[in-house]
Length: 393
Image (cartoon, rainbow, N blue to C red; front, side, top):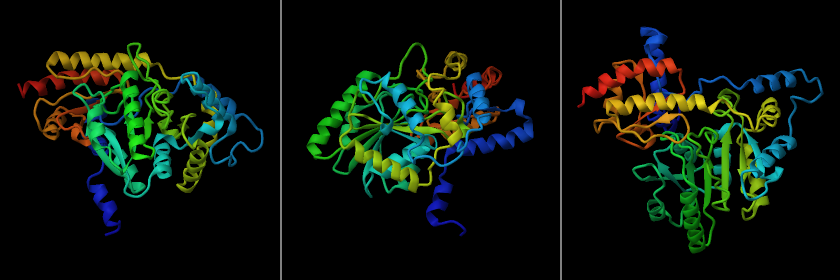
């Protein structure tokens, strides 16, 4: 066996998203790209904003020495200060540059946070449905996932969270706007979650952290704003990236923000910087750090994604699909008309429609559609969606 037993087992149960992406590659070779409707991967189809390209040209033409050298392990001071100033405008507390660590995307940010806070065997509570890669991130750092269901509308079930808090609980990990549901957690429910965690911290005599994974923060619709977890709970982190709002997934640039009111904040910041280095994520790409420092108020045109959501949501619900209308991100998570979500998405494949079963996100009985694709792909797929659901009526 060329790999370890553990890795071989992980490969065998690896992400449904990648499996469907590979299926799409095969089908496109067989039927042609234009005849395959691939909704499997959350890979933004919008190009980065024009401002990004202009900033990049200016940076490339900068001949100052040291442009591509190592910097402080936490990232450039001026970039971290720019991020801190940006976040201070939307949080009641004021952040400084030492509250920010630049990272290799949101995946790097989450791994650094978990490496910093977890002792072997400690648990992290994750509301489902959820991004299944979290399981692997926790395993990287000897943590254990405790999965709890959300309510029927995908809002947080605080009673379910409280029921699994134990002496081994180290953190709660949330994702809002959520992948795969598009749910945005309200300020009220985050506030109640904060109260719950404060009470349990007192009972335990130890800290329970709240980690918010926020790469879709700017992708919110219908006038909804994504509330601050920093205002809801002091012992909290944000891990995020510019992959979605600037359409830069391949550039692997993100950051960690520490709540400025966190207990022992300075020691925590030192731990994050060390883990950023020893995990091999240091340094976050120098060119991208310079670029995003100037683009914090910039994003792709969110109305384009909202239009895609509306075309797909209106079409599917008119055919009889049952679906929560997402408040953010770029995913729909409809119920499958049969209990077996894998069987249902297999039927969709007969129409060359590629989606991901909800069981791949801890949400059996649903399926995920990533609508960050062309309008034409959405519109031309709709007759196939209609034909399939009619088979089950």
